[in-house]
Amino acid sequence: MLTKYTSEIFDVLRRGQFICSNSPYEDIQRLYKILDDPSTFEDLYEYFYQINYILEQGNEYFYFSRTEKNVDLDRKLDIAFAWIDILVFFKTFDSSFDVGFRFSPSDVVNQLKNNADLKSKLDSFKKIGTDKKNYSERVKKIIEKLEKDNFIALENEISETYKVLSSFNYLKDIVASINIPEEVENEIPE
Image (tube, helix red, strand yellow):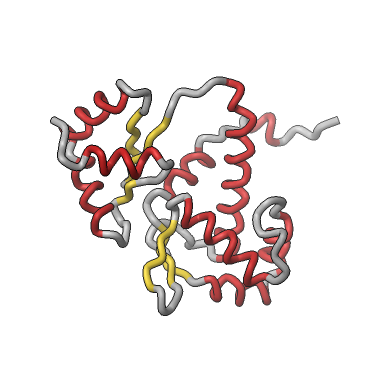
């Protein structure tokens, strides 16, 4: 059964956004509850599949995927590597950085002052924020990317506090899906 929210769901997901259970936005929470109903999900899956969108369900989030040509594989790998770098950066900032975690840009900048490993990871970003002069601007650029791609949301404008959304599990799933066999892991390239 299609719902009166079908077009709203489509509008969010077609932009590459996620619909997360822990979004601070009530309209997204409502859409999540609608999609979380198994019969509604099945109906919407079939509906969107007809127009070449695959409705996917992750751990507390929904998103669209599409079948793509192998030509796009290089582009997708570049994007995946960039996300892995960002994930490692924030795990270096705070090892408990995960779904539900709250932080502000100033928290990250303060940590940069005392953490050489974190500073090194920030300096290694090739495309994100390298045009920015100071750490504060570079961190804000990374946070903007996370927010734009719907992995975090601004929860409090006054304190500039962000909340990590359940869609962050998508990034963790990407990393977890990388399987490096033990014998390859210990080999030394010649």
